[in-house]
Structure formats: structure tokens, C-alpha cells
Length: 133
Image (tube, rainbow, N blue to C red; front, side):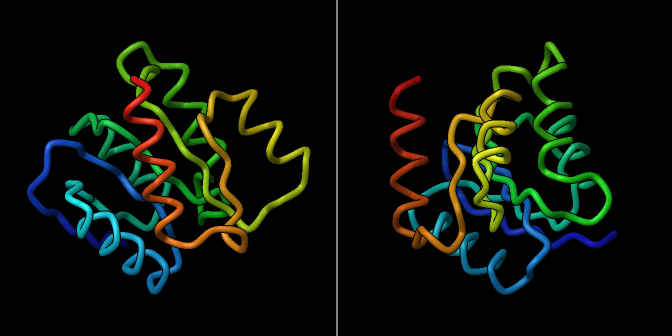
């Protein structure tokens, strides 16, 4: 299994899906440091398995992943009655309007472009999203 998990104490469970181990660890540490219970996985298959077994409060996912990509994760979660209400934030290097529209059409709450945000902004978007629910 190509998975690295990092859990901390916290009320809000976030699943972070990213195949770049440096970026994955960096964002996982930032989220954990802000009090979130973070599980970090590197594949779409592991993400879907984790959601099925653990029902996180939020999914933050890269789009370009080996095997099952972020769009497919989003589509799968939103088409299942048990997971359709879990908010999903897409986080990607893809910054074409078509990709952003596809993410929104599939049910993503936000579409963040990696090159345009810093970790603090990711935390802010998550706080904004969770406070609106």
C-alpha cells in the first residue's frame, strides 16, 4: 500500500490526498498544526477506502493522481448517499477554466491552484468552508 498516514487529535477529520510526498507531508503538518485530525494518503484508491471506513469531515484532494484521479474521487463521493455531503476541496496544478468548471460541476466546494496558494490560505479556505456548515 502506497500510503502515509498522519493522525493528530482534533474534532475535525480531514482526508488529504496527494501523491507528491514532500507537498503531502508539508500540508499534513500545517493542517495538524492547526488542530485538525489529518490522514494523508497518496492514491485515489486509498482515499476511497479511507472515506468508506472513516467518514472524514472534509476531503482535500489533488487531481492528478496515479490510478483513480481527484475528479473520479469527487464523482464517486458525490454519487454515494453515505458520502455525498462530505465537502471536497480540489487542489491542483491544473488551472484551466475547463478543469475548474468540471470540479465545480462535480460538486467541489473550492478549486485551489497549487501555484497560487500558500499553506495558510489552504487552512483559511478549510476554516471558511467548515464555519459555513
